[in-house]
Length: 379
Ligand code: CAA
Image 1 (cartoon, rainbow, N blue to C red):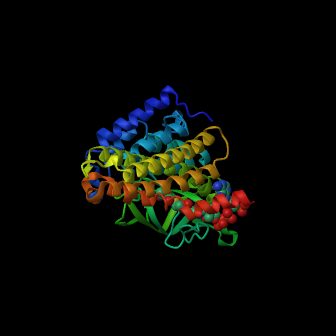
Image 2: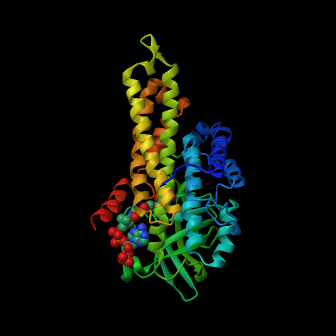
Image 3: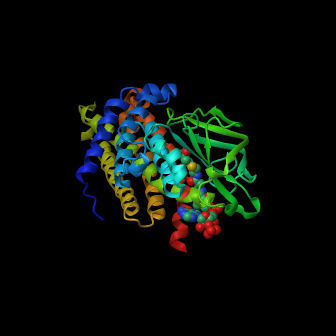
């Protein structure tokens, strides 16, 4: 493993850092408060090539590697995890899934516009009664010859209202259990497709999360991704890469909160000296720094394995499991170091603590990551 970055990777990392400082930071508190989607910022990230980073340029993407993507996710998440989850879902779940498993016609019709950021995508697996237990899909896609009829409800869908294209996982043949599941491309505006209410969330409040309702939606068969019955494997394989993106997001949240706490400790005085001179604070910072470095190594290793064409199911799960715990622990300590100031919005760390929590839940809870890891080491 070699984590020496190329000139190109360093340039992209710097571009993301500059963008986050100049375009995300100024209104991040207000957007969180108002639950306002960062539409202008998403447009600018598209111009920077952040919406289809790993997609082949012939389909409108930037043609970069997973490591570059992870560096961008880390930098954006240091400032605004709501913006970074929009990037993550579009890149890892939607664009990657379509490029890897879609037909040529699907790539031309959808991927080119998704990767360039002209339109936005959403990935729709979770349901009111099928979150972690993803094989228990209740949404149905019944085969009607040249089309499917889609019925059901999806929950907690990132980009729920802002997306134009939705990859929907649904059960076609219940007798075949997970082998009877399909992944369909659904467009906003298809008759019978309604966007449900917006969720009022603890964190990542400026990303829009909605339920989706499908009432007899006619989806042409050419919108099915890969062969009949591949939908569950499509979801699992796509999520395996998605978890690297979320791990990078967790890493960024932790690194951002740590840096704020470190700087604060150097200026805030108590008992006649800067609080960094008190061992109680200095040791907290030492622990935070060490854990962030450990998380970073796991995240970069998972990205490296993906770029090497190796299996990354386990390294991605471990990276997400650990980095999300570090994000939670670090942000809690960052609030503690800020004391009373940490509890008010102006200092950012309370938002980061709220944002960190979702990294232990979406794209597979920590408990799901432990299932994936333990099954692999015990088989
Ligand atoms: N790659 C390929 N195939 C895989 C796979 C992988 N990574 N993981 C599982 N499969 C296959 C299995 O091989 C099996 O196929 P066969 O029968 O042909 O062998 C099939 O899938 C079923 O696997 P399991 O028997 O292991 O299924 P299970 O019911 O025990 O569940 C699970 C497995 C790992 C727990 C899975 O249900 C899971 O990952 N759950 C979590 C779902 C999740 O992450 N949801 C997140 C929602 S999306 C989101 O959050 C996006 C957002 O908006 C931010």
